[in-house]
Image (cartoon, rainbow, N blue to C red; front, top):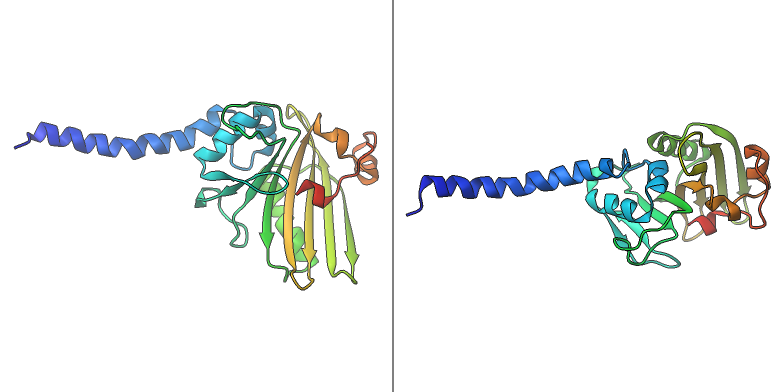
Length: 222
């Protein structure tokens, strides 16, 4: 017959496991310099390996996808927007993401929706995403609607001041009401290295930085 001391020790050991796991989930991302699950500026400063580890601690797991892999939330730790869970794209995406460490050119937070929404709601969703990411210094926005293609694109852009490697942010709300329509919302933070291929006429005029040869487009960002 086991002693009460042995039984108590086993109970303590069993209880310790979830406590340690919870501690790692909560503390590890902060120790990497990433203040929240939506701290995109902190992620680009931390690099690919630290960002990948912070994702795993928060229940955001890697999935193979074309043209590049993505990180999708599997647990309700990140919260939802209109019932949808977020996913992330890193650029570049290291294949051995817990071994290889490299500076990030950009990181994108994205949500997918059904298409039945209007322009007002699209801006409200972007407002919420930008607030979560701590990106408030907006310098311009534009909207483009194509009635023939049943497609509406909202674009907003802003500066990032005194946040390490982060240079500027760009947000898209894209509504497609065609037969297989959908809506996609993205917020991307570009680093000083990442802007070299992502400054078009609109970004250049609003941010006061030189235009690059390759224009930014929502399809390329996704």
